[in-house]
Amino acid sequence: MNPDENLLQIRDFQGEGFQPLVTSTAWRVAMLRYMDRIHPARIDNLERHLLTDEVFVLVQGRGVLILGNNGSQADGLIPQEMEIGVVYNIRANTWHTVLLSPDAAVLIVENSDTGEENTEICNVNDKMRKEIVSIARQFSFALD
Image 1 (cartoon, one colour):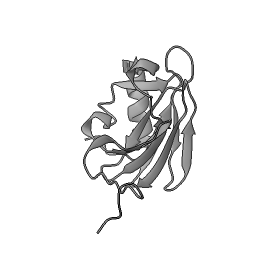
Image 2 (spheres, helix red, strand yellow):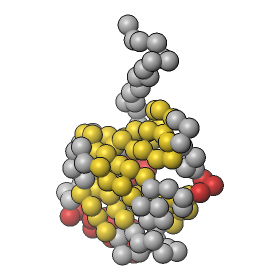
Image 3 (spheres, helix red, strand yellow):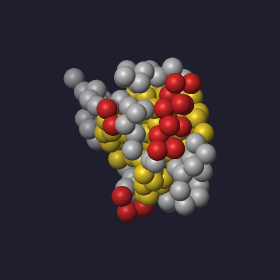
Image 4 (cartoon, helix red, strand yellow):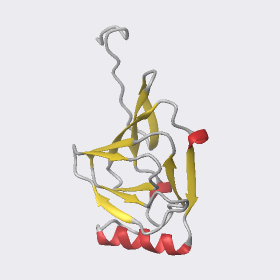
């Protein structure tokens, strides 16, 4: 028997993709799991949040954050291999995406008002796609 929701909220997510789990007035916690859209050969954009940092914590599997710069377009991609349980705070205005193994799960903490109105998207061009695939190979991610 679970306690009263006024005392404790218990949330879990076992599906595919991104799912907010708990939202407060100022922040929300979500879970990101592997989905086909973030397969290294299919990533079609990077994003950046204009008003807020975003925290990633790998809880299982393997993950690599891919960071761009904080200019008007993402370029010069930088990989950061993630370790389970380590907090990675992506600063506001930093272009980013993530590579995940099929068994991976990432806990994400961000402002509750983070959304389309304060997020920019940078479409991946051919040069960036080659960089992303090269990074995936460097960290032994499957490309088939």
